[in-house]
Length: 495
Image (cartoon, rainbow, N blue to C red):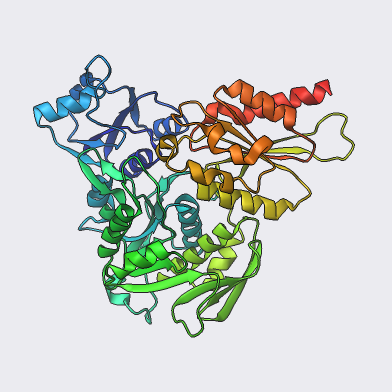
C-alpha cells in the first residue's frame, strides 16, 4: 500500500517508515522543519519528505494516512488549525490510523508471519536496554528485527526487519507455541498513541517477552499521577499471553503494584540481591564495570565491560533474562555485552580540549547525554562519579526541556539529582517556574540563565583542567556541545 506519514521525522515514526519501506510499501511523509539525521536516513531509503502539513498533500492520494502523536487538533493564535492536513482528512472521511496500530497490524502481527515481540518498557533506559537486547540476539545469530528510539552504535540504523525465524530449543517450555516466529525488539513507550487514541503506545505491540525496567512518575502533561501510569503498565501486562514472560525489576514497588493487579503469564524478577530461596530471579554481584551474573543464586558468568552505572547493570540483567527466554544462554549474552558499544547520546564523548599552560597533562572532556528526568540525571552522574572518582570535577550543564520538566512537577528533585556534580548550569529558557529558586539549596554550585551564550560563557570561565562536562537534554540544546568545545579551544589559545 501507499502510506503517508504525518510527523515522519520523529524517531518512532521515522523508524516505522523505514520498516514499511523494507516491507515493500510506498512511503511518503511530512513534518514541520524536516530535519536530519532522520531526514537523511529516510531520503536514503527513497522516501519523499514534504515540509509542513498543508492540504495540497491530499493530491498524493495514499491508501492510508498514518498519524504521529505530534499531530493534534490545536489551533494557532489566529484561530487557524495548526495541522490543516489532519482537518482535511477528518472532513473528507479519509482512512487514517496511528503509528503504533499500523505497526502492529502490518508489521508485527500479520497473519502470514507474526513476530515474537520482545518489548522493553520503563520510565528510564528503554533505548539503551532495547539496543543491548537487539545486539545480544544479533550476536547469537538470531537476526532480530528492531525499532529503537535512538541510534545503537552496534547497528547502522534505528530500525530493521528480522532476517530469519526463531527456532526454540526442543526442551523449551513453550517451543510449539513460539516456534518459527521471527524475533523483533521494540522500545515500548508509555506515552499516548495519538490525539484520537489516548492509550499508551505499548498496548498495541502484544509482546511475548515483556521487560518492565522501572516505573516512576513522568509525562505530567498527560498523566495525572503515578497510579495513572501504573494502570497503563498493567494494560501492557494484560496483553502478554500465558506462554509469554514478564521480566520485571524486583526492586520497584510501583511494578509490584502493577503485577498485583493481575498476572497471567510466566514472570521472572531481576535485581541486585536475590531473596534466599527465590526462584526465577536474576542478580548481579560486584561493581558496575565488572560483576558476576547470577540466576537463582548460581553464578552463570562474569561481565567486564565499558558501560558505566548501576542502572546499566540492571539493564544488562533485564536483557540477559529476556534473551534467555528466547533460547540464548546467559554466557553468550554476557559475551555479547562485552562488545556492546552503547547508544548515541548516552554519555557520548563529543570532544576533548587541553587547556594551554596546564602542565598536568589532563584534558577537559565534553559529553552529550539524553537524561532529562531527575532520576536519569542522578544515575548518570553517579555512574560518572564512580568512574572518575574524586580526582576530577564534574560540571553538569542541563536544560529542563521535557514536557514534565517544563511544568515544574519535578523541580524539587533537581538538587538531589545534581548532588554528584561539583557545579551545575541550568538553561532556563521556556520555563514558567523559577529554576534559581529551585536550585537555591546548591548555593554557589548552581548557575541559571535563559541565555545560552551567557550559560556557555560561565561554564567556560569555571572550567579547569581535567573537568568532565556533561550536557544533558532530550533535544538539540542549541548545539551547545560544539559551542562549548570551540569556546574551550579559544580559551586554550588565550591562556
